[in-house]
Image (cartoon, rainbow, N blue to C red; front, side, top):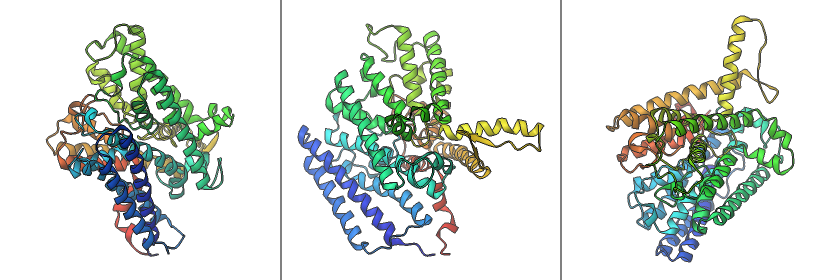
Length: 497
């Protein structure tokens, strides 16, 4: 069957229209704050709108049916097209004149990685900073819709299991139609963003800082308006607790938020993935807090104002903040955790492979996959003792098919191989071992801060140009569940059948 190129380009044109429209919103912010780049942003927005309109006009007579192959192409190339067009505001305003750097920053935004090449964020025009945060927000919501409505249809990376638990074409529906499901999720996402903005402003942030950090938090992105990230507010614990609350929510399956608003709390309490996600956060926070309290010297890490509640509260807060920031792959920082103890450096590095819940904006492997792998591992011991017994893996009291278990195993193996290969490629650019493995884990997991030369208080500007392109590719791979991109690299995908 031949590819229906018209419908592919029609969708890509539609994405360009969305991008252009959002850039015009950033233009309004630029105009309000009189930052001097309003005309440049206006030009960027209209250029992308015109290009999108032309593409949609010439593909208006497309066939309405889209098969799986076309779905893969739209998903993968959609993120690339958004990143290419989203680079335009950086280049036209000359905030980031280099195309490589502008593309890296934009891909980092849309994939909600939060890795930046900007050395001084606070001198960047406010309209451009707002656009930078908007790329997070757009990408984050795109991922929710992708995970809940599209990937299960394509059978990607074990997410068929999620299809039975999430809204969409089958299972526990919010609404039977994908478009209506997307609308409800957009409403929750927008509502959380508005709520966090208001709370942060009440707690002491300026409106501009509040809305930017809300956009970054709900998308689990991590772009900040300050060079010190959230460490800028270490003297205001309230701000940090608000951000932590919304990081936790953003790392949770958004379908559970819908059930909460509908009063169906039992659905949340009984959800296996949520219970494990919550336990992980609690256990990891206690471990980190104890090590920080007894072993780490946090006095030199811009940690706290001397009048803040006390060392014990400070240890708990910074432990919880960093655990949430890395597990949910948000990537905000309140201190340089690589300076605390070697144990915590390795500890937080390990958390980069965890990820939040399926159906959230988090990156990483996802708690659901870890849970299925752990359950299957324990069952293998039982199967060794009772080879004739039927011992299915269960998720939310339902049996998980062998095909899905194998799919998840395949995903995990592919992920770890890509992590190793990614680190090898980074090492070819004369990057040391610690920095190379940190870069690979962070970009593939969409975490943001890495280790070594690219740790929490540094950025990615020192990466050579080829290293930035490789990092961008890993960000895209991790964000789109690996197989969505990797399948496009296989010869049989492009054969007409």
